[in-house]
Amino acid sequence: MPDPAVTNRAASPTTRPVGVTPDWALAETPPESREPAAVDRLASALREHRGALVLTGAGMSTDSGIPDYRGRDGTRRVMPMQHGEFCASTENRRTYWARSFVGWQRFSRAEPNDAHRAVAALQRQGVLGPVVTQNVDGLHQAAGSRDVTELHGSLARVVCLTCEDVVDRDALQRRMAEANPGFERLVRGESADGSRVSSQIRPDGDVVLPDEAVRGFRLPHCLVCGADTLKPDVVFFGGSVPRDRVDAVYALTDAAPALLVLGSSLAVMSGLRFVRHASRRGVPVMAVTRGPTRGEGYLTHRVDAALAPTLTRIARQEAA
Picture 1 (spheres, one colour):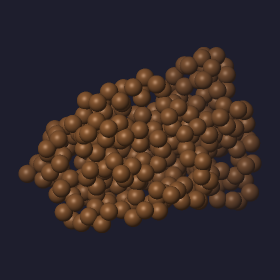
Picture 2: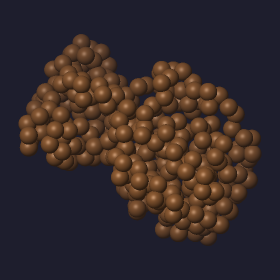
Picture 3: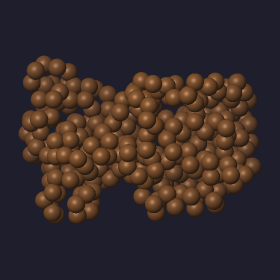
């Protein structure tokens, strides 16, 4: 929903279709980034620049069961609903909410993984500073991180595009359950024609449902103005991150002694722009992520390795 908007992630997506690998993703990561010593070099740089600003992407949450939109080669596997599509018609919103109603059952049960916990520990140790996340799952806060900016918003909130009233997602989920009795059987993979419901949630919390199930779904309406324009409080693909939020992250970047990118390929401009900004300031830009990134030329320290063991190792070293 993000710049990427999710709903991961302004932010507009690249124009490449699903399944096409972008040019930047064809490059090899530097071989030194895969050396065991790469983690030690990163840890040393973080100690030298204590309080680094953290920018996290979808790779932070894959170990929690929330997949990324892209494979490790940068190829987009699926394309979520666009902002313009969602706003265009009642039927498009019905499609979104039917799928999201089922997906939320699983998405909301996701728990922080060791990478989230390591970031929180490194914050407590003073190694890391504020966190800017492109994710919309709230797992950094659940793990104990403080000073978290949700660049693309949060799926736990829902906003009315007509009157701007904001409601809690769990409360809306209960309303949708009451308006759609029996629909929850789809959570168990059942559908009227015997087809299977997708068991894989997406970063925006939805799943794939058969068309006939979607057509029968009763769309939620705003309790304040009555409109059917309720939308997750996240930035969809094709939407824009609010200007005041962008400015706040630029301010954090200006104040940071370094920038640490975790679990992001920087495929979309919403995150890449802060990397470019930090680089122009001459501060170190570090990254721990699998595979190539769109911001490779801006990185001063690079680790191509799994997040959880890498961050846990550094946190344990600091605690020793």
